[in-house]
Image (cartoon, one colour):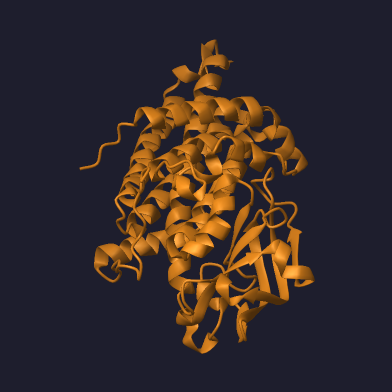
Length: 400
């Protein structure tokens, strides 16, 4: 039985994160978005609050909380700006989550612990210039050479590409096997040498206060000890990481819906036409009511997925559904918020234009809305079934 009543610890986490984001991050986010500038001080601030390891056990430097806590943090950060939630998605959900689930004890101690403490910034290198939704279409390769692997290839649309220290990188060790020939590697920027070069992409439509780019690998030598899991398990590892990522993206979209709702309610009270606040008009009320219903539905879907992760249950269908519903709903909420604000909504005078630009990205990354649609249909039709992974999803471990 699922109980979505928050614990005292979770309520405290929500309030602490909300107050911190309002005080430390919100005052500069619009300016940074307009300037298309990532603030490198943001990650250390999140680390100082313990958010970079919120759901990992204390023995690995984490806060010892759970996946519901991860979802709540994602909601609160995206309420202010999507770029803030993206940091948690790639660092906690995608990179750290992969190492926690699939890593050896030595790998967890060496890499997960500094990631959880916020001493290192983590990123996720899956997408290539030639392959997005079609993961098996990537061209990155890893060739065994004694006690090392030699990595070559390029990755693009990588969040924190120019700032991350630790990358979870996917490459072919045997391309003839297609997706069964993909392997995962932990790549340390500082150990990779001159063969690892990152760059930043400019003039994105949204999430402009975040860093997005790519990196190229030319004969980057990675120790065999940095192979995550076994050779050929990379596709399974990537998919399990995406379960984590989709949870954070879906939960973040919940925060964006709430931000659109709050901004719209405030403006509907303030703005008057024909002698009446526009909130009195039913068509405005209709848009606001839709935000209310979608907020509650999206929040419950993502809390359900987080609850299942706490129990160590496979929840690919649930995380995908939560992500799909919440991101589509957030895009609609942002479009309606702009409509409610009228011409002002189409400018940078109010945050809703930024909300609209940011919301579109979430319908693309971590699996497009179309990919999520196909997945849900295949589950319903019986064409897709979740089989247990070689290693079960880690349950919330508490303080043991």
